[in-house]
Amino acid sequence: MDLSALIENIKSGALDGRLCGVLDCDAASARERALGVAEALAAAYAPRGRAGLFSGPGRTEIGGNHTDHQHGHVLCGSVDLDVLAAAALNGTDTVHMQSAGYAPITVELSDLEPRKAEYGTTAGLIRGVAAGIRNLGCKLSGFDACAVSTVLSGSGLSSSAAFEVLVGNILNALCCEGRLDAVTLAKIGQYAENVYFGKPCGLMDQMGSSVGGAVAIDFKDPVNPAITPVRYDFAASGHVLCIVDTRSDHADLTGDYAAITHEMGAVAAYFGKRWLREVPEADFRAALPALRETCGDRAVLRAMHFYADDRRAVLEAEALQKGDFNEFLRLVNDSGLSSETLLQNIWSPARPEKQAVSVALALGRELLAGKGAIRVHGGGFAGTVQAFVPEETAAAFKAGMEAVFREGACHMLHIRPTGGAAIV
Image 1 (cartoon, rainbow, N blue to C red):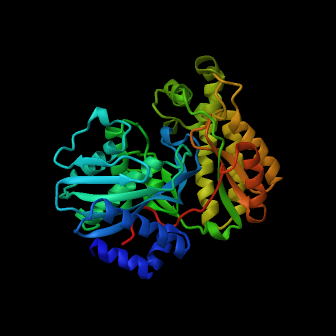
Image 2: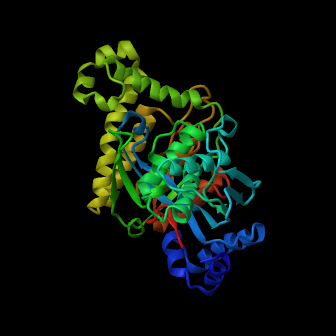
Image 3: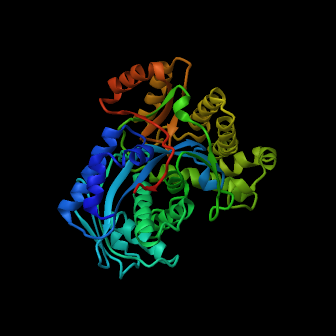
């Protein structure tokens, strides 16, 4: 359909079922957001070609903290925050993208070579996704798009992956007749982020956004990871997923993140391997005295965390598949304690006076009073914590957290069953 027909269908409620199913919200909210981007597209570009609505959700890391870069297991899921766009073919070789709150972006599809000047930019992501899709043999066409995002910046919910998945779904629907599956689009997003955005990320972020729901990933072969959807209705768990933004400073933490990879790698190198996944845990345990001398105690502790959290990520997925949410919560709590005591990614040793994540975890445990679960979220050292909070105490948990970290710090989310999507 063209844009005018799309707008009329949104207004009439004809698309309510599809909108609610993808966006995981009530009809009025879904219709308001969809109409907003569609009317913005009409006002900004007035395109006449085939039009549609598209969504790329944020993602949350559920299990496996710093296990992916050692080719281990993770558990992640898409959330009900997304980048939503209306887009339409424009009959040219150019992409025009307008995101609410940002300057318009133009990308020429005739030139899809990487540009260092575009590292860290939205234009780089668009160019990279387009190049990845072209490399698979799809003939590209220009489009106009207007987007709005609810994915929290700096929250560890991966707004960049959400955007990559969004652009991938736009091009897949408008240019590739929907032939590319969710895993392929995730790999294209990673390619764009690595080569065009200049960030050497793994595949977890894009996979969590693109596939949808909870997803267990085995990175033994990182080029072709094993993907297993985890069938569990989080809405029926009696718990709310909360992400608490401690609003702590992310600056100058690159060395802290790099040290984790370096120290785990040093332990693997002792055995002539590159990744801990390649070293049997029994061999690691037998060599502990020598490893302490060669690699240092912190490296040994971080390797201990890898082996334990790598197992836990698998067990968490199994617990959810069996419907044993109490066991899942126990494993999440164990993972959180392992990150604090073994991985040691809760605060930076360069700034011991800054321990916002530690405060959030301590306060969260007081508020949970032995129920639910709480852990550091994502890379750590600063940023966010993740909690699964019983529904009956969720309001008190939110109030308690925001009394310390200010209003709006605690975000109550859902695991969204649908990943990246062409809504219509």
